[in-house]
Each structure stands twice: as C-alpha cells, then as structure tokens.
Length: 332
Image (cartoon, rainbow, N blue to C red; front, top):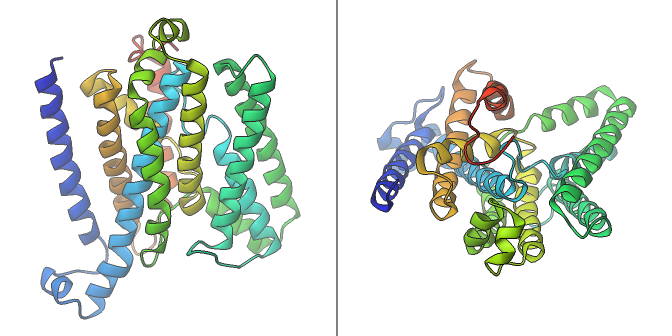
C-alpha cells in the first residue's frame, strides 16, 4: 500500500472519529436539544456538559491509550494475542482497588479517589515486580517479561479472590463491579487527571516507532540496524505501563480493546507503526466511545458496564485470531 493511500485512510478514520465523538454525547435516555446545550440552562444542558461530555472524553482517552499500548506490546512480543494487560498491570491495579474497597478507605487526592489511587499504586507494584523478575532472569528478554507478567498476574488474581471471600456482601459487590470496568464520571477531574498519563505514554511510543518496526521483525535485525533492544523495551515497558496503569486506575480493567483495535488498523494500513500508531489511537478511542454509547442505551434506563460490552465483542475476535491462517504480521 502506497503512502498516499495510507494518508487517505487515516484522514477518513479521523473524520469518522470526529463524527462519533461529537454524536456520542447526544445519545441517552434524556433528550439533549442543541438549543438547551448551547444556552447551558436546564436539565438537558447539565446532563450534557457534566455527565455525557466528560464520559465521552474519558472513554476516548482510555480507548486510545489501551489501543496504543496493545500495539506496542504486540510488536515487542511479536505476538498478535498480546494485550496491555499481558504483564500483570490490570491484576496489580485490581489488587490495589480491592484492598482499598475492603478496608473502606475514602480519601481523595488531586481529584483521584482512594480506589483510583490504590489501583495506580497496585499497577506500579506490578511494574516493579515484573521488571525485577525479568531483569534477574536472562537479561530482560521478551520471554522473561512475558513469563514474569503471567506469574504476577496469576498471583495477584488469587489474592483478589481471597479478599473477595473475606469481604462482606457490599464490599464484594463493589469489587466485582469495579472489575467489570466503566467510564462513568461526573465533571472533568478524571479526564484531566488521566490526560497526562495518556499524552506521555503515547509520546514515548511515537518516539520509538522506528524501533517498534524493527523489534516486530526480531531483536537480531534491530541490533544490526543500530537499535538497543533492551533499552527500547524498557522505555516502552515503563511508558505503556504508566499509561495503562492510569487508565485502569480511573476506569477499571477494560479488556480486549488493546487487542482488537491494533489488529483492525493493521488490516487497513499494514504493519508500519508510523501509520499504525495514529490509526490505533483514533480507532481505539472511537471504538470505546461506541461501546459505551451501546452500554448506555441497550437496557435503558439501566446501564451495562462497558467492560462487559468489549468482552462480548473480544471473545469471538480472540477465537477468530486463533483460527485465522494468516496472522497480520506476527506469528501465533
């Protein structure tokens, strides 16, 4: 595919993304006439500006971050099934949130609730453990990172089950609900708090797009082209983990976005990460906004957690990846 066609597809994706993001805040059981929105008066304006618009913004940031992180992990591991949660970030954040809910902490700091703060600390704990284990064994290799992430994830998941078993009904329900993921928010505090994590993480990945192209081929090829695989992997690992940790802290673990979005974009644009990065960013955000819009209206006036919607879509997609003969640039 030539460069002009790729730029055309990126332009079309940008237009589609703008349409979805602008239309999504208008979707819901409460009608929001444009006249009421622009005047800023009445219940409809309050719902639009304080509930729906922040929710759409949070969903877009979270979806974009998960898609970009998934793209980076799939290139690092050369595995189409790699996700932003492969290295245990999700389970670490879930453990932090579960401990906070079980102990009943309710302190708020810098616009973040106690649950979000503890979830982020749990994600950092997972980062440190995986980094330490991978550094001890075989010099921070891809296989060592993957095995360390799986081990940490299983251990944290077991601790979460123990906490749930020891919790009362109310705490256990709150833990389960948090684990389903969601982008419910009031006001813009969560959006402004998550924004620096997403910008910094995407900037690191964008800086290393050349390295990603070479790592996706193999470490030996990367070394022959003057790339230090260890340094590149550490930068990508730390940058994406902080970004995903922020997403999980504010939205809970929303699965499969980081696996599906990069693959769909790779089908459209190929495996060149210079184009795949902006495409994954736009498509991931648009995808989660659409899923959240469906979650708001499918069983209205009740809502389905958006993590349930993405999992319902991600399960069949996962099976399709397993049975597909050609694997979009990476070997299964």
